Length: 225
Image 1 (cartoon, rainbow, N blue to C red):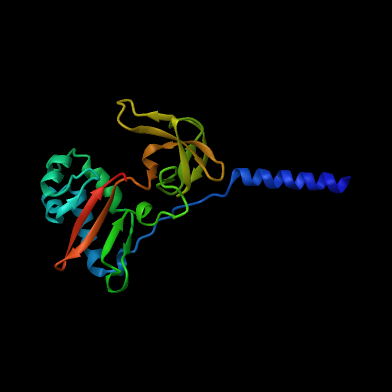
Image 2: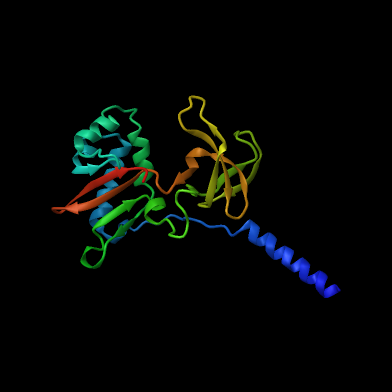
């Protein structure tokens, strides 16, 4: 009888552990140093974006730069879409989040350093995690709060955890333009609210860079799938 009770308890513990699941992470990866010319190019590019130098950005665009999956491409479309001549263009924030957060080269053989894709949340997303269903904490030691408020109790901290976002439970910004607070749950069962800027989708904005005629060019900057 005692053996049967013990076995039942063990099964319950195992079932509970399986229900919670195991934490998964998408931690920063940066392979830029594998090509010194690209590393130097990126340093200059980040500086240009930080000072909002529209002419520099236009100068590094490939003539056929892809901007969406709907046919938007080329420098003229880029100017129209992003209006980077304006200092308040949303491009600057979106682009800096991409170019300052690692990435990896792809290719094979002699062309293994032919394409650099950023950020790491796109280039190094795990193949076995659904990038449409899950997102990731985009930062280290991000406060997880009990309620969607900066005054709410901090119930934990998350670092690069894979999370599922509860859209219905999340909170929009006062102007209705995007999320302010994301209600998240990790694969390990931790749940609460984090500021939305610390949650990133695998298919959020990403950029690709290729060396053409000895010069690095941005060949795509787009989001979605």
